[in-house]
Structure formats: structure tokens, C-alpha cells
Image (cartoon, rainbow, N blue to C red; front, side, top):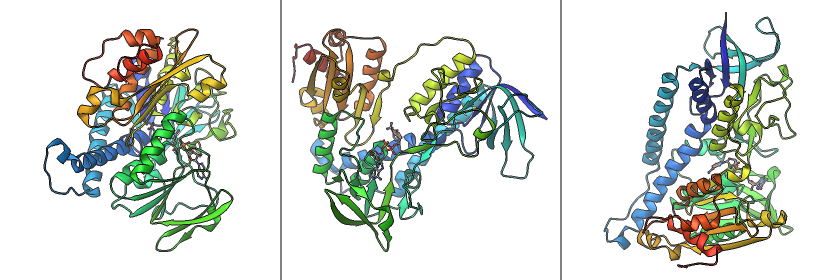
Length: 474
Ligand code: NAI
């Protein structure tokens, strides 16, 4: 028997379940089909577990420096098993919360694999969903007026390389590790590579990053990346750029031997593990795309229009699977906009430059808007200035004065083009820049805001004063 819905969401990750709640609030009869657990990559393998582990590493580092603050301790030890247990507890309580939210919003959850069907006896148009179960149970057929694909992404691998999950691993394997390796080579100096490099180094692992491009974190501002590299290399992380790994020559003995090319020379390095962090691909396999007119781009992501509709106008795709920014907060934003479109509500459109990006390592990085290189490429007449955390009283109180905030404004309009931050807690502070960008605040307005003293938030006001030519501190 077919079950009828206004909306079926394929995938109950952060994008999927938040979208479902929004739909239920608008009175749509909604179901989620999820093959694993509500919360998806963000809650179980990505954002939350990695940040929980980074917190454990930060506490370890803080305790090591406790004597500076007048707190005498014996020499601390990092216990990976306990860090993993705490990470699991954090996931567990958030997962319970998500299940409660979904239940209390009266959203039906089908715990199986969802596949989109073509036109059939159930519906004359493509988009009914067959839910397939692992246990011996008949498939359910969900007939829905609308479908949102929110199936996310998975770690990409390199050609001719097999992930054995022991020596050659992805971030999915590391969130479950039971012991720390002595050393690791991280292929890919992007967001995932850098967060793992930070965690692993800070808990005592020898880390080498191999990045194919001429700079790690190519999407971030060059001044921020320069400072980050200085800090990471001073800590002892080895960063090799324009280094091309030869995947045909990987040798798995007691250690992994890797050959790479840099400056036209061939080099060899070895480590206990090799982490592949070279991007993520869309989860579109076996979900029945071939039964529809939905089109994929060359990289395999689902093509959508500005309302997140695919070529089949009643089937939407949100989050990582559509090839936009692979960020949980982008997935939830897109999901809410898609549901508003289904319900005929015209919501506010956010531009790409209002999306913050963060890296939660040590040090933290946060940005919103354009980098200085992008501002130049777009031909803006701009002004830029920076304020060091050295100028901020609270940074001295906290004992973390390394880092700065850089602000770029349009000389003609005084509009903020970009804010780039590095240092302690900047992933919290960037929220203020998001609000300023959303309300189209100018540097003058940001400089006039009253920030509590002493607080790290003062750095945003100081940066705005600096770019206005009215610097007080720094
Ligand atoms: P990424 O695209 O950020 O970085 C991949 C890096 O690997 C690039 O620098 C690329 O040049 C390099 N690379 C590619 N092929 C290579 C090769 N053969 N040898 C050496 N280097 C190679 O992808 P990443 O780090 O895997 O992250 C995936 C997505 O997940 C990103 O879009 C990221 O924004 C998102 N994410 C966001 C987080 C956050 O907001 N804090 C945390 C984790 C992931």
C-alpha cells in the first residue's frame, strides 16, 4: 500500500531534519527516509565529533600550560579512549535531542534506503520513493507531492588508491580510532586536512601535510594562511605544498611509504598512517537518479536552480549533494528556502558573501565575504586594515595573543567586502560579522557599536576603526 505525503526528504542529516521541521511547522505532512541515523555526517562523523576531539586536545594543551596560570599539576597524559568516549557522549545526547525534535514535530521517519522511482502505478510522475530495508521486510512506497534530496557527500579517494581503513584512512575512519598513530601523512591541505592536522599534532602525533596546489586552504585569505602556516610550522607540523603524491608507488610495510614530486624532484616519506582528505563527492549512487530527468554536473553533483529545484520541478536537492558550499549551515539554509518555495512563501535570499566559513583547529580561522585576492580580481577600489590580538586586553587575560582580524571595505560605498580572523575563539566571533553583513552594516556602524570590555569581541570594533583610519588600540 502506498503512503501519501506532501514532502518526503531523502536523508536525515542536519540539512534533512531541519528542513523537515520547517516543513512540519508550515503544516506539510512530512517524512524522512534515513538509512543510518538522524543527524547524518555532521552529527556522527563530521562537525560534532571532530570539534569534540579538538576540545579534548585544547584542554590537554591548556593543562600543559596550567603552571603559567598558577595551577600546579603533574605532567598530563592524553587518553584517546576517554576522548573518544566523551565524543560519543556528546553525539549521543545531541542525537537524542534530534530524535525528540523530529518526533515532537510529528515527522514520520523511515529507517531504510530510499530510492526514487520513475512514473509507475503509484504516480504518473517520477518521485515516489521506495524504502528498502536490510531486514526481511517488504519495501514501503511513499507517494509525495514533493521530494527533497539531502543525501550529502562522502570522502573522495584518489585514483588507483584503495582505502583499507587501517593504514590508508579517511576522516570517517579517524573519528572511530581507538589508538593514536605515532605519525601520519595527510594528503590534502583543505579544511578537513587542517583540522585533523591540528588535533593529531596537539595530542602528540607527528604530522606531515602534502598539498598538491601552491597553497594550503586556497579558498582562504592569503594573510590568514601565511600566519596559520607560520604558527603550524613553529609547532612542528611539516607542510609540503605543490607536492604531488604518486599513488602507484605506495608501499604498505610496517609503515606506509609514499613517493611525491616537488620542485621536479622525487621524494620519499613514511608514516604509520595516510589520511586522504582531498574533498568530498555527492551521494547520488543507487538513489534512482536514472529514473528521473534530474541532471548532474561534471563532478557528479545535482544541478539545481535558485530555489534548489532540480530539472524535475517537484524534486529539490539541498546541501552537499548539490555542489554548493559543503557546510552544514548552508544545507539548513537551503532546506528552509526549498520548503518556503514549496509552501509559496518568498523568503530572504542570502548571497554567497553572507556565508561564514570556519576552521576549528588551533589556531581557529573564520571568514566571511571576499578574500583580498578576490576583491582585487573583481576590480574593487578597496581599503584594508588589520588589528592584532595583541591590542585586545582579553586576549592577554586568556594568554592567547597570537592572531589578528583583517577587514576589507569598498572605498566608494564603505560596505564590508570581507572579514578574516585567526586566533582563539574567532569561530564564535565571526557570528557578529555575519549579523553585520546581513544587516548591510558599514565599517562606520560596526565601529560605533558598544562592545563589552574586556572581551575578544572588541577586535571587530577595533578592526572597523582601523579601516576607517581611527585606530585606537593596535
Ligand atoms: P577541500 O576541498 O577543502 O580540500 C581538499 C584539498 O586537497 C585541496 O586543498 C586540494 O588542493 C587538495 N588535493 C586534492 N587532490 C590532491 C592530491 N592528489 N594531493 C594532494 N592534495 C590534493 O576538501 P576537504 O578538506 O576534504 O573538505 C571537504 C568539504 O567539507 C569542504 O568543502 C569543507 O568546507 C567541508 N568541511 C567543513 C568543515 C568546517 O566548516 N569546519 C569541516 C570539515 C569539512
